[in-house]
Image 1 (cartoon, each protein chain N blue to C red):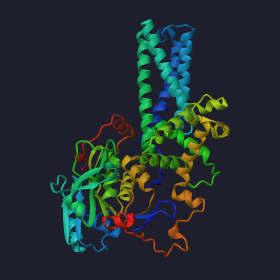
Image 2 (tube, each protein chain N blue to C red; image 1 turned 120 degrees about the horizontal axis):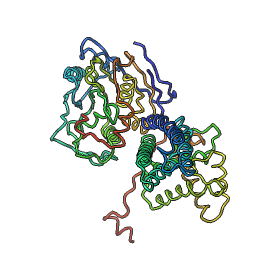
Image 3 (cartoon, each protein chain N blue to C red; image 1 turned 30 degrees about the vertical axis):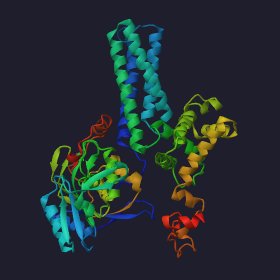
Image 4 (cartoon, rainbow over the protein chains, first blue to last red; image 1 turned 90 degrees about the vertical axis):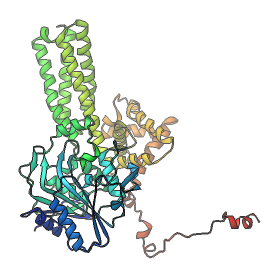
Length: 253
Length: 286
């Protein structure tokens, strides 16, 4: 499939991101992983999957099976309310308790479910990095900073966004797509493009851009925006921002 | 569609603010025209002062329309329009209350709400764009103007003033010293007091680049307190620009690991025994 690259400076890091489509979600996942060069990577040790709520069960099962075939000794799905916790220092987020399986894993993979969100415009791979964290009632920092801090504290090796049945402003959309890439920030950028939305408008993606700077995207697969798709309007996002409406952390999963 | 990655591109807040001003500006002009046509119905008193109030409302409308055409480029219009809107809103409200007229009171209340919304969204726009950690939104805007003036790259600058100012903001956030609070005060002084030195009673960040440069030159040439202000501005701008890897490279600095003699050098830190360890204390005393 043709690859396209964003017009960033040649010395900027390159991130490969891919869009997979197919007859079923398993096939779409396999195509996305293949295009993002995940299938060619042998895995060793303990693999942990942080799975957002709403992710297609076939995507999780497919990913687990692929990881086991690639040589992973153990594949665990991190529960949202894990009881076995380990404490980490997550920079601006402070000391956070995270699921021990996520903390101890050799390879961490986030599996996000694509949906629009009134305040953060959309939820993707970066917000899913919060899944293994023990949910306090109120975060000490804004959600974008918390997502960034979690990714920095416990780096993610691979990210998958399940958009097989995504959720836009009007409800469920059968977009029949799975997106994958090594860099969760780059993957979220591609996710925004698939929604025909400037990804930098999302505060979560913007935080990543300000912190990690630009990357050159090597996009693979069908890059045509979802149609039909209804994004959150700028007015809704601004109203959610100025009124400070914050979803509890666990509903972002 | 490929979206180019821009660190300081538009934010949703700016998009909404631009649209809001584009609607509100002509709306205020229309209100002033309506007040001129039906003074008895709309104005608190159909006298000369009432006409002036309608004229000021129209002026605010024109300024806000201009600001809506380009929030970043027409910042001065937005500043002035916002300030005048507060005055005009209070004038409608107060005069309406004094004259006990329902229509002017309603107009005044609506303008106060519009002013509050404008202020909130504008603040949210700066917060979303730069996410300042140490400086307030206004101080950060002043700092951007300071950097733009102090680092005169003449088109060859390797970092934008925004990037440099945000670097300084993050740096200040990590430093724990009382001096940082004084730096905030310096920026307040620069924003509101220094333009008076060249006879411009306007905020520093509203001035054009030549006027800002005149202010900075005046401060550098001054004595006493102003010398400290000049020194602070120089340190702030230089730390942000030359403290970055791009800035260092631009002035010819090559990191040790990349130099010819540094490539194969063993940079493992040397470990010396602690001379104050319990066993060696006697030997040190002797």
